[in-house]
Image 1 (tube, one colour):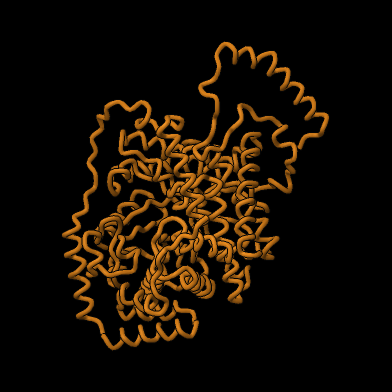
Image 2: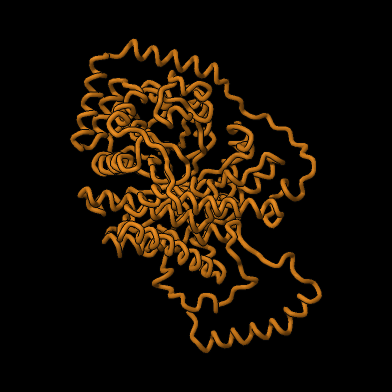
Length: 567
């Protein structure tokens, strides 16, 4: 972007500034610390100039919004056309309580629903299972059968709303229930919109929720991808999730690299099944974390789009624009929230949300300030939602497409993040002898990802403990906290009693022969390598329970015990 003579002039001017101005100032005043770095410990320079982006090619590396490589955004007008989808995580207790929260959020201006499930639902067991004791409705809504889903979406038109489901091992069952509700409401399947997390690789890498081993889990993920491409083309069958990788302690670069590697692995598996990449890739979506280092996060999001566009083109032969555009949801960093001085979290979340917007996110969840203490209260949820609305309506951040594009610092950081992430991805590909999918599977089995994340998490905590990483209100400015919060309390006993009563009622009302026939057909489909989703839909429509359906898969594939290889 600059010719050599210009760069030489700038270099000489910088050296003159350093000797004439900077050195004397440093001698007299110094700087706050010897080394400046991001939350991920990526060192940042004092000053960036055109020298730092000397090799930047505008058309190849940046281009224009809505055009490859999409560094500057996936749509030409971005938020000038319409703002990002504003989602607030909701889910606790029973379906009735969460349905009430859904309606509250819609009335407050939320434009998309985001559903949290309790641990039994996440793990594919029923509320009356002994392992569910103490967990029913505790960290999300309890869903055992289609009847729960009917109540959860009572009064909500699936043709008008987009719904996100944060669930993984049992994601195909929840998806089947959502399709069944659409069928009940008379909403054409090709019109329902939403996103299913359904990312099992990140579970084995970071979050540690699984039912069956990695390879059959991958088969089930691809079943959903294949079925969605045919039946629900506006629904995202998978949200490839870096969020939980970052929450486990990874750096921003590791979050980006491991997430994209997982995504490419899913692409390869679907293509091996015979799907054309341009048939399913436009439906893939991603899910990233947004942490405190604003410029690092913006660079991460921009690098993500550029890497994805290049790899999908060069490695997988994608041609459709939708296959090259990386679209993603962002959630602010739960790991950054503090129980000490919780109102400080409002400021943290605002900065993280702003970084996501400046980085070009397609949808956004802002954490509530009390989430380090409990599930969010209505007051805290409203503040979190208003944070997004103020950024969208008052800040001006949504008025300019890629407003930080062209910044020497942002472009240099984007290049650095891209290079380091690609080094990881190439390493994973090499582990799989040219296959990213096989590399990811091998990395899971050998504990590669876990060790990388664990080391980063340990190093971060060491910096916090040493005071090198400042956490306001925790290791600095940690005066007495005088804020009193009314936090949300879930009556687990009452939720469990209500849930068990409904589950018993379903057992009494359903046709057992129909349930047994549906589960038997599902078992046969697994054994014959058919796509299992149509059979799961039949089973949920017969009111088979979550646990009954997942037990069929476990009976065929066995359970999984993590055994980490030695480095």
